[in-house]
Length: 195
Image (cartoon, rainbow, N blue to C red; front, top):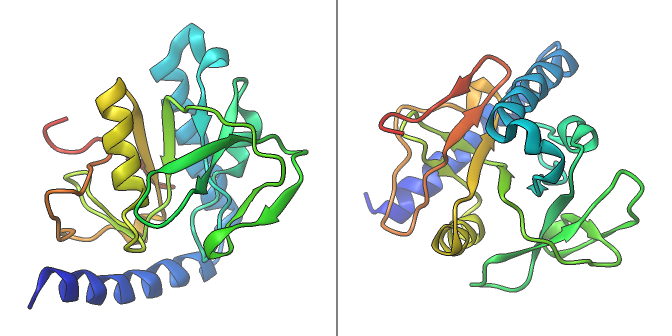
């Protein structure tokens, strides 16, 4: 089996697992629990500088774990990713709960009036993750390119946000795959082995 087919097969299984997790009872309770853990992780990371910490979240779609409670509560600048084009890293535009949103590429909501920002922490959506910190995304490579560039330019913290049911034994990887620094689920903050 090729790496491409292995990832495609895992993507199909992961989408089913994530959809089932999102449809399971007590979703609102699990979202609150995940966001509480995420908020604590951010506070521990930034300390007294939390209000100055530029954070990027995402507009949840397709049964993704919802980061909006953390985004709304964050005292510093918050952005969301914007797809600039195929094969390019993501751009980030400022967001507030009152920001007018429009449908962007791949049907993701983006700010109508884009004001660029550079995040120091990224909350990253995913289909599947493993304990090594690797994530399986939708296959466009946008977050991998973005993290590679941000890490080249300085320190950035990448936090995967997921349902616990999205964990797999091993995500197939290639050289371009960027690991996450932490994964937050409704059950735990997972620090990848070796980090």
